[in-house]
Length: 260
Image 1 (cartoon, one colour):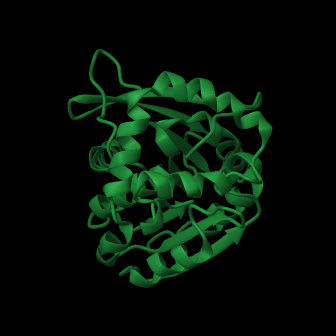
Image 2 (image 1 turned 90 degrees about the vertical axis):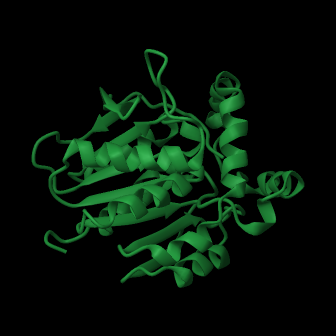
Image 3 (image 1 turned 60 degrees about the horizontal axis):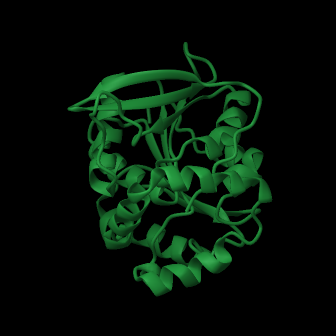
């Protein structure tokens, strides 16, 4: 559900913050003072580096981008690899960070499920929040192992061979990947979005069979959001890696006006 492919450009600022009993690592790009907005990006399967191209592209547009590395932890204390606690930790991180100005909470793949959880927890307190769900998993056809394998067989068909570096990270992640995928398969985003009260954007690559346009429109139609949008971009499931500029432009356009 996500690759890793690091690029040699702007390097992130690493920050650790204790969120409840767990430690959360964030990787920050762009202006640290008075940004136009902050994009908090939750990567798929808890693997941050494949999102760095999009984070750098957002930085180039004058936005601060914070990539959350929720599963790293330290001192033996970390967030459990499940959608609910990861979403709760995301909301707590945003709250404790006291971010100034508009916030776009963006999640990709299983990270989109986590971001939805975070947005539901934040929306009462943050009226300048927008939610972007990219490559949202898992629609009903993929909530079994055979269905997931069928979806995975075609979801990456326009991805880059450079993403093969992800295999090393997947091996290191071990049981975390299995636990997070199983948690994601039990989750039903279409049943939770009716409670959403902030603007919502759904996006995916044109060849992303995990998140086809029909699935995105189903979720958008079910939401309680005051404004929704569905956008199909070039690429397939991991277009944050292969088409970072296009993804960043879409996210930048979703930045809420101050005082929303």
